[in-house]
Length: 322
Image 1 (cartoon, helix red, strand yellow):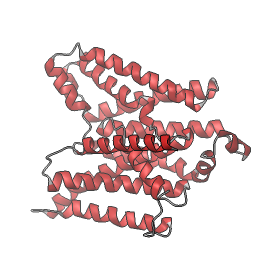
Image 2: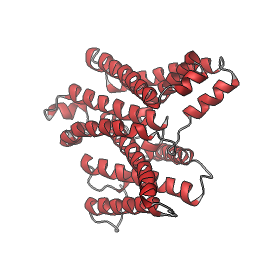
Image 3: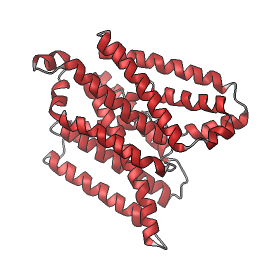
C-alpha cells in the first residue's frame, strides 16, 4: 500500500478526490464557453453526466470482480463481454445490411446489446456456478473460451464484408467517450442506480467475501447466492458501459489498482468510492485535455487503454518479483 504523508485518513483522500473531480467538471463546463450559457452548460453537462456514468459502471464492476475472484490483475473483460459485443454488431451489420444497420435506432441497438449480453452471461453463471457447483476460476476460464469463440466468429464474418460495410463496422466498434448518445443516458442512469442499491446493502458482506470462500462460509455468509448476485450486477454494469461507449479492457484495471494503492483502510466502502472518483477524474480530466486544450487531436480511449496496459504489465512484474 502506498505510504504518503499528504493524507492521514481515507476521509481526506475522498475529500481531495471529490474536490478535484468537482474542479475538473467546472473547468469542462466553463472553459472557453461563448454564446448562450444555458445551451453551453446543458450541452457540456450531458457529456459530463455520460462520463460519470461510464466511470462508475467500470470502476464498480472491476472492484467487485476482483473481490469475488481474489485476483487483482484481471477484469470483467476476461469473461468475453467485449468479444460478444463485437460479434453482435458484426452480425447485425452482416444480416441487416448497411442501410438498415445505420437506420436501426440507438435505443434499439443499446437494449439488444444489453439483453443478449446479460442473458448469455447470467445463463452461464447459473449453469456453471449454481447448478454444476463449479468454482469461480472455472467460470472465468469458461468466459475466456467463450470470448475466443465469439472473437473468431467475428473474424470469420469480417472476411465476408465488403469494404464499405467494414468501414461502417469499424466506426461502430471504436470506443469513443465523445460520441455517447444522449437518449441512452436516462435508462443507463436508472440501470446503474438500481445496481448500486444491492452493492450498498452488501457493503459489509463484500469485506467478508474478500477473505476467501472458506472464511466467508465460516463467518456465516451464504456464499454462492451472494457471489451469483454480484456476478449478475457485474454483468449488467459491464453490459451497460460496453453498450454506451464500446469495448473498454484496461480502464477498470487502472483505476481499481490506483485505489488499492492509495486507500489505507481497505474496506469496500472506501475502495468503491475512491475507485469511482479516480475514474471520474480520469475521464473528465482526460476529455477536457483532448477536447478543450488539444482540439480533439487525439483519442482519449486509446491513451487510457495504453496506460491500463502498462499498469497490467507493471502489476505482473511486481507480482513476479514477490
